[in-house]
Length: 343
Image 1 (spheres, one colour):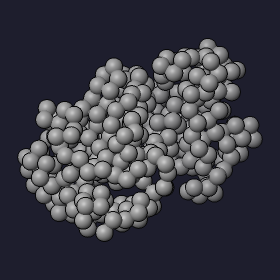
Image 2 (cartoon, one colour; image 1 turned 180 degrees about the vertical axis):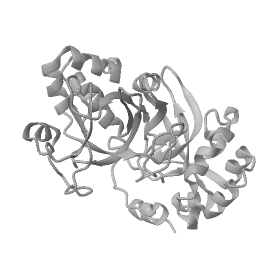
Image 3 (cartoon, rainbow, N blue to C red; image 1 turned 60 degrees about the vertical axis):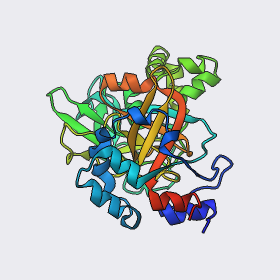
Image 4 (tube, rainbow, N blue to C red; image 1 turned 90 degrees about the vertical axis):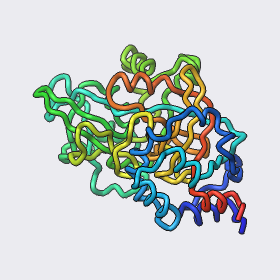
């Protein structure tokens, strides 16, 4: 039976998805349609896939996850049990990158460490629209409540810690604290990079996280105003259950893997599904990844954010990515046929 778009999302992904002009019905593809598939190495993504496979709906994914646990030949596994599906295949994808920042911080407020990093206030409920970034800073609604996890040295780094949604704090005594996403204030994310372009400060191709950071530091008053252009404010939680060598926790509460995990819009791609990435730009990419994370700015069927790893080098690599391409989801055969109206 062919389902309407909202019905497809509810029946296949157990979640509603918006009906928008860009959300054309999904299209069934073949592996011959995937540019670069013959030269890829599917086995390199297998551990990342197994990390979250067990969290998928067992009615649709139980059989393939059980087979994956036996570590079969990766190429045969995907080609014989999955079919490629593309949402809005005529729409060009937008790929960006994200990373896990590492920033200097102090456990107590001290000269040079003046920017607080907060736990989620207990009265804030998921989805609730709360104080904006400017209101939080101006009204002092979080001050004196014991919600400070630490104080950052650099307010710009603290801002980008919120943009990334996780990170590691390095203290003067050599200790490290890992933070994960704890909640947000319910305001939509606004890109400060796009705002700099709108103001005529830079052309779109010139903007990166490093460029933005440098501009804010050179222009402290205007920079403060620019950061407030994004009213979204992120709160954190302390993560002590993840070994240091593992990646940060993604939306599935599992560690994400550098250059194998990607954030997507779960209204179109189920979290945990393998996805085929065809990214253009200065550093083209053709590889299989796993949809293991989400982001407030990651909306739409052809929108994806690639995880590049931890630290400054990963941040520089991630900050340069704003590339076109195509995103394709691999789904178990029966799910793919049902979703595309073939059965």
